[in-house]
Length: 89
Image 1 (cartoon, rainbow, N blue to C red):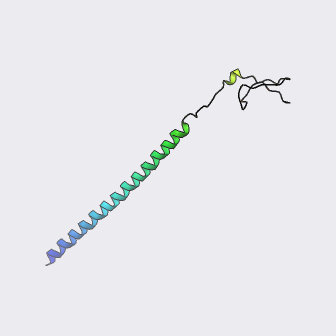
Image 2: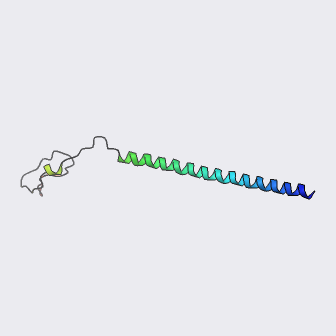
Image 3: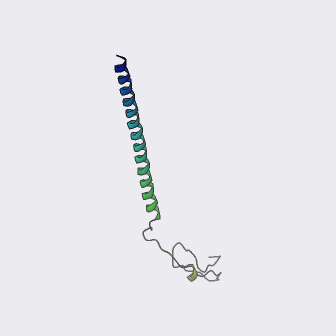
């Protein structure tokens, strides 16, 4: 009878350890899945933020003047990003 009790205790212990290991591995796997999914979503957001804006224009600052002038100034771009300027107008 003692031998049967020892075998049952050993079997119960193995079942408990096995079930506990499966639960822990499942939690770790699920946590990894969630973290990787969030990381992928963040990467997509970062890539979208770095994408060029439609109809975005650029100007070469070396070609834009930086002088004070006394006459009215008509800018080629709106809003003006640089060029000669008249403080009063």
